[in-house]
Length: 112
Length: 113
Image (tube, rainbow over all chains, first blue to last red; front, side, top):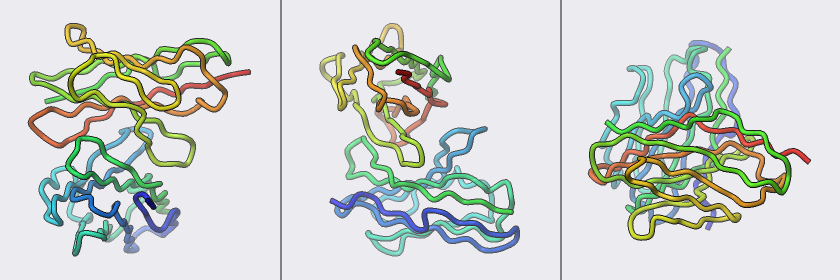
């Protein structure tokens, strides 16, 4: 089992640029979560999909953030335009409906 | 709303010593409890979980945790730690009525030789 796959692992961009983070969940998992981790705020849930449908996006910081899940094996998190305060590690996690979530290795985003 | 408090942000110990990482939660309904470990520059890995049944839960790498409903606690323990246990440990809670995992701020365990 390949686990949750995220790309890129590192992203450095300039303020104002568009950033797209990608996630491939574990095959057969029907729930997908995007988290953001910072020193100040810890781990925060951004959005949750179930069967490719966004169920709860109340954690998305603002309209600059958007997420999609066009099929069961792929999701994107987009930031447009990016700002320095978006610098963080972004994690994708998936679940099969059991309570535990399986996390990817994360994408470290730096916005200068 | 559910919340998690990890009482210690950092715990330094010597190799082969026992360790306890403390976690308290707040919720008005039944909960599920988890401990995750994060090694440097990696994602979170599930150590153990409590869903129901026995309140003493055993996980990977020799860790165990005990669910104490009256104390609303789920402390993580290991009788003898190794250098390789150095990592950040996160306690998380999920209410039985929803899917959301709420994480504590994490405890950095540093095992010294």
